[in-house]
Length: 114
Image (cartoon, rainbow, N blue to C red; front, top):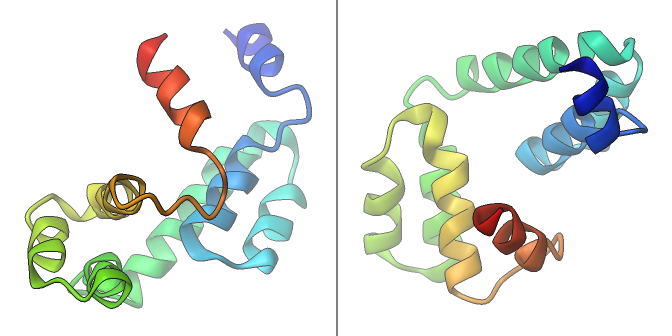
């Protein structure tokens, strides 16, 4: 399994990329990259937990969805999923609206197929 993971992510940046996408913070990316490859998932999880502690009602992504589109329906849609899934739901809303700031639309589509 380790060889397969390394093959899919030879530079071991997956969790650093996830941290950057999650928080939008270069320092979080750097923080994940500062630990060894096998520790990066745990460091990313720490970043997620720290963010949730700073957002006890887990409204950040719902708020961002509302700000992005100005839609109460989008806010409600994000709040309707569990806290751990809200960032993904927010990303889905942006993709559906044609917003793709990280240019991952086609990579995400390929991932869903395969």
